[in-house]
Length: 307
Image (cartoon, rainbow, N blue to C red; front, side, top):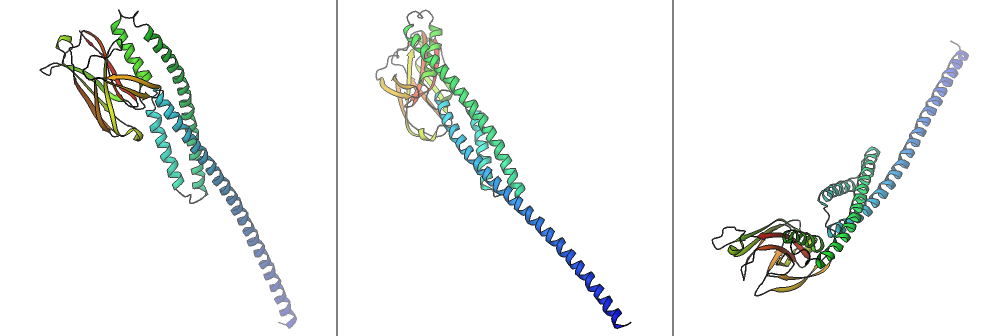
């Protein structure tokens, strides 16, 4: 083979190699460009998701504050928030878990944002419902306060309806004087000398009142005074040699009471309490109301009848 032919073949090979090199270079350059563009796109989305996540968390903080305010107002209005409180506690736990968990990739961040958005909608629904309930309770309490004032002026006309009046007095006391926390399993029993229960006035010697206090707010835990106040169906305290006159400060305002017995207790989150009171004089036949107060208002009340 001549030198010219060798040079020609060599030139062709070099040209082919250069073309292949250029083609591969262009391919990898294009691929690198697309990769960079995709990374930039993902980074932009990540920043947007991070911003959205922070915004939702701030909105949830505001909703949490609004719920706490509405819950306190609801309790003061004698509403029932047990079911929503448990649901909110569950949502708060979910939010805390998301906040404490760092998103490992973009998909995890998407899922976190989606979960927070769902929680926010549920939170807003609960807050709206609670706000509506509070407005209804305010209207109802306003109506009951007016009725309470009318009942006080109508005691004489209702003297012949003693049993109904005792129930009405019990209900009005409960609705206008209740404390933020309440007694449950409230029981009133009358006893005679041989410790047998009775409903007969001539045999009634003592009264036994028992109740449970559950979920006592921490701010009200600790040293407290509990008062036992017994009245007839007209609100007149039963006779006692050592009555205790005091003022309790219910959410609806100060209330003057006359108690027959006072106990110093240390309130905890949950406990059972009781009063055992011996009458100074036997009770006459009729209808009576037994109420338990603390300094923050009424804990429990129940009417009872002696034949």
